[in-house]
Image 1: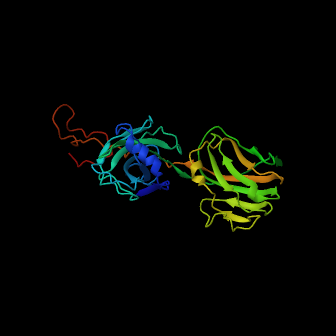
Image 2: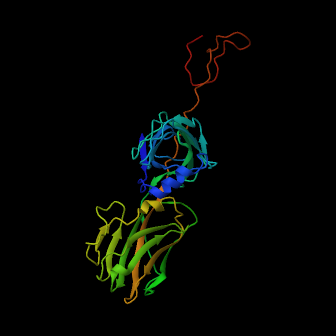
Image 3: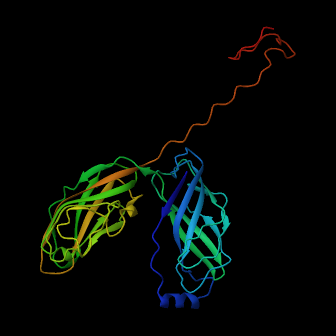
Length: 334
């Protein structure tokens, strides 16, 4: 089975930045080539198609040129990882010419084995060293592991919290998830109520226990009041836009993908952070929570039992040769 892990292509590098790169020595330039997506196929493991501890994978790393001014030729890649839980087997592969905006795969898959001791849900770091006609460059990417288990709903008790008016430091409301381990795999944010008299002043983030953050919404709603029963979920059909009417009741895609939280520690303090960057209106965080799924990994299949030893049903030579051996095999009369 195959699975694709995709990251949106970032904006094209500005002309001034490209000129600076062209002027730099080729051996030190970071070329305008980026990760696009990773396709994995299980070659050994439990066969569920999900990268998990104990699996061996055939890995195709698609890269994309974001340089509109040149085509990269003579491209080859060497894959490596700093993780002790990763062993890279077949590490080298050629690439076709990299054309602007065209995702391009390696011609032969890389081989990657994941240790059985790897932590379920922890993303694994990789570096692809590319050699091109314009010089070398490195493309870093991560391989997520595990799949989402059943979600648990958590509600913050750190409410209400006043939102400082015109203060860039903002306010955070904490949500504590008990436990001592595990990784998050899918996160949905529920805002029961934010009271505010000018929603367009607000930017709202979710912050994970390890400090990573995702922007949920920013400067939407103009002079509309409040957020009421607003849910942020990557699978929603639409985002909150300048035309969306407050109090935004319903389910919306966040401004930044909540999938960025995949691999974050599950246990610890999560937080909703709100900044009101314009003076004159006031509000508070009144109720919020999150539905968090843990990363789960299926066990590997146990090895088949060994075949029974060969025997001759007592027909061999030597002492006791006519005495059938003790085993489950039924021997003919001797």
